[in-house]
Length: 221
Ligand SMILES: NC(=O)c1ccc[n+]([C@@H]2O[C@H](COP(=O)([O-])OP(=O)(O)OC[C@H]3O[C@@H](n4cnc5c(N)ncnc54)[C@H](O)[C@@H]3O)[C@@H](O)[C@H]2O)c1
Ligand SMILES: Nc1nc(=O)c(N)c(NC[C@H](O)[C@H](O)[C@H](O)COP(=O)(O)O)[nH]1
Image (cartoon, rainbow, N blue to C red):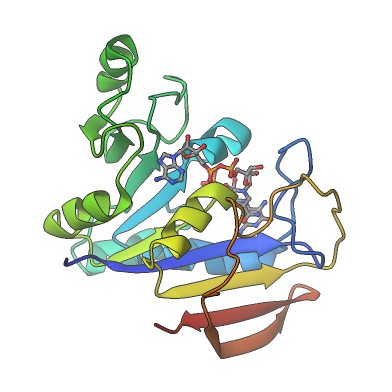
């Protein structure tokens, strides 16, 4: 199957949490890391999140800096990368900031008709899989739409499904100088977890940033 290069970018606390036990957003990154996230978006053809992240954070997922916008237009790319939401049941609120032109809502064939009608006015809605979004099918669809570089901005459940499916090439984690705690607080990769055959990583970069550390890992097959 042909698919884009897939990388996860996430910020986590020193204890590995990406938000609090209330699933509310916690500002982990400082300005330098947020600038880096902006550049990563600008360099990507599409940015993807799970609906849990839309419900918790209401991200816009657009390129904000005029320099980054200029960089894209020089390369003949649209102002913003495509925005993709993985949302099997169509639970994204019609007021979500991510919606609008350039947004693809990936649903399953089990998504309720009335949700699809409501959301169909706000973005392109495409179904993959029966009960749950079939991620390999979605990635192959994005590849056919010209997406070669896909940035995944979480959350914990989508990260799990992608890693478990062997669909991730690289993971960048910014580890910030903060402790969030909580056995039920989301971590970088949640889901049921592995009990063997743990995916192995190779460290490709490490640098001090914003009082924390940025790590880049390559997934080994
Ligand atoms: N610190 C960070 O960098 C960062 C980044 C993003 C999100 N977050 C946090 O993560 C939390 C959200 O994570 P989450 O795990 O609740 O939600 P998520 O964003 O991972 O979305 C998961 C949902 O996507 C849907 N889905 C559809 N098909 C799927 C599939 N094949 N595999 C997996 N999911 C599929 C399901 O409804 C599932 O519940 C929030 O608290 C948010 O603040 C933190
Ligand atoms: N890199 C990063 N550092 C953090 O400290 C943090 N809490 C997030 N969380 C990811 C989350 O989904 C954010 O809400 C979007 O990065 C916001 O995206 P917008 O600015 O709305 O486009 N991401």
